[in-house]
Image 1 (cartoon, rainbow, N blue to C red):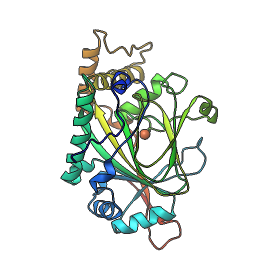
Image 2 (image 1 turned 90 degrees about the horizontal axis):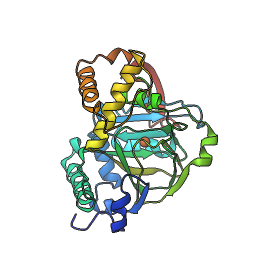
Image 3 (image 1 turned 45 degrees about the horizontal axis):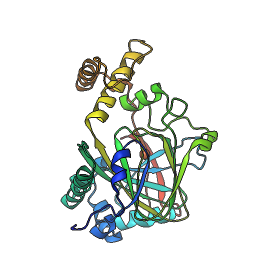
Length: 310
Ligand SMILES: [Fe+2]
């Protein structure tokens, strides 16, 4: 885009990069790729493997996440339904749908790599979240490195420590092996130890790997970009936790090390790769059921449909 994407980066940010939550300002909107018209076109071109459409309940302690489908609705219809409903749309792997988003994704990580010594990201991905006024995203943790680039609306993001109290070793293993959903058991008392950001347009937030978090929108539509990345250490962490999860659940082993420097890292990574390649965990993974669709004629913007496996 010519100008730097991060507006207020300073040298000190490189030292704490990945260890502490980072709040900066960005220029992604200048790309023109996130206007209403651009988003409507993108949604219209998006096949079912590139999105999750969800609706949810109101209680942050009870996960009632439902999976839906866009169906015949146009991109503009989807946006209009999100404006008046309780809907959360996650466009995934957008860089595969339109090369302009791939160019932007590469610019983001080229710029950060130039600023942070030894940061060598790979398997980078770009997603776009469009969500209704007052909806929430339940308490959960993500597997890859994640950055949130906020564009429109305002929302609160609660970020919690990565200690066992907030994310047990078993829960993280379950998310990584696909045996449990990303949503984690949540108690509102956890909020006493959360760091809460009231995210404004053009702010970017990057939290330490696997930090549990949850989100509540203010009374306005919200649009954000998410980026995902892996590094060598994130890949090792993934492989060790994956292998530990299998060793614990299938073989009943306990007291499993999460060290990324032990000599066991490479055998564990090989074991995890083999298990995944042979799809030996498939029978333990959770299937998503789709049970609603966009309905521009309804007050909530959605309608129930007979459930089917995604
Ligand atoms: Fe997340």
